[in-house]
Image 1 (cartoon, rainbow, N blue to C red):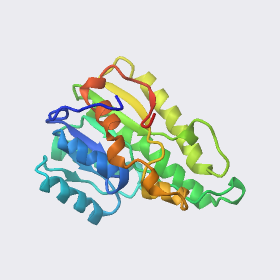
Image 2: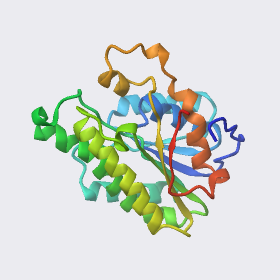
Image 3: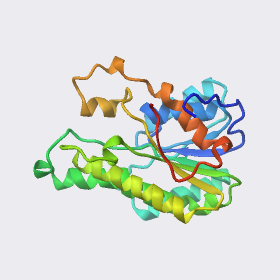
Image 4: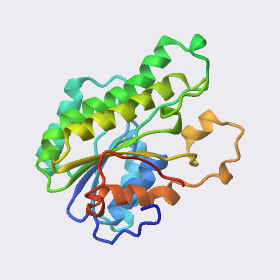
Length: 246
């Protein structure tokens, strides 16, 4: 699956929502989904960045994407429900979600972590995944073969000093993925988590500012697993947490 070669029509006629699509892994994978035929819903909080991704997809001759901005830091349950309703009214279907949006802060001991930082990270990295999934499940249940991908982390499996709310949020994602997968066992929806590993992104640079970024894989170099888990070739893969780099 890590060297998966996706057919050009892997996601033809499918609608896929990608959160955090304005940069990094989200941007790279959104473009890959479009390349194999998906109508991609680009989510982020910076409309101008989303428009730039939109333009790149159009310029490549891929299916026309959609833009649905929403700031996850302060989004309410009603706003998530409105987003799902917009998808239904404008696109008529939803076949998959990549929960890629995330937030990190400088590495800090829990003793010195502000409650504001803690709450924001939990909100963006964990609560929003629950709220968006809950809002979109009725649409996903109508799909022939739907896929939900969450984003985990190595520090969401074994806690490490100074990773604080980020690590706790990713422990929550691991649990959320397992619980949801068990609830959806035998349904048309499969649920899996991806741990991207050390990747050349702005988020990684925040955590490791002195690291040589050119020693890391780019988002494009790990995209094959995201393609595999979103397409029908992975229809029997469910409830797994998989490392993108092995």
